[in-house]
Amino acid sequence: MTNAVSWWGAVLALHILGAVIWVGGMFFAILVLRPSLGTVDPAPRIALLGQIFRKFFRYVWHVIPIMIVTGYAMVFGRFGGFRGVGWTVHAMQGLGWIMTFVFLAVVFGPYPKFRAAIQPAKAGQHVETMRRLIAANLVLGLVTIVVAALGSI
Ligand code: HEM
Image (tube, rainbow, N blue to C red; front, top):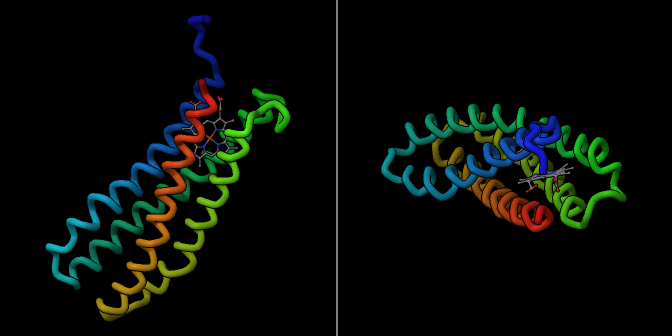
């Protein structure tokens, strides 16, 4: 054990911060924000959701490339490629790609339809589709974190 702070520690920290922001944001959205929005009337609720999605997705657009780059930097720079990593890192990258595709399915699927909808009832239908996909991604994200931790000790 050495007291020196390694650059790989900083790369791992960046990677973990990405997971915290992405998965933590989805946790808050699904389990805290959504159940609390019932108190708001439909029209302002849709307007508020529009702002929330826009801001959160902007963060996720930045987080995903950072996680992918830091993840593969560690695989190839620190562990010498796929042969040097265990099943947990293989599972992590598979789950990470699935999460990325689910995110893309949200931002190119129901999200533009939600933005284009004029009536709150129509917009609400697209929000429900987004909620399901984001809830699925939340479960995947939590599982990925558990898998990542299992490989670390
Ligand atoms: C392309 C996708 C990904 C790759 C290639 C990748 C790769 C890696 C690697 C190589 C490590 C270091 C393992 C070690 O030090 O033993 C790591 C750690 C970690 N990853 Fe990923 N990862 C990916 C996606 C994700 C995603 C999507 C999440 C969470 C949602 C995640 C969460 C974590 C966490 C929490 C750690 C810290 C585990 C620990 O060392 O205690 N990763 N990842």
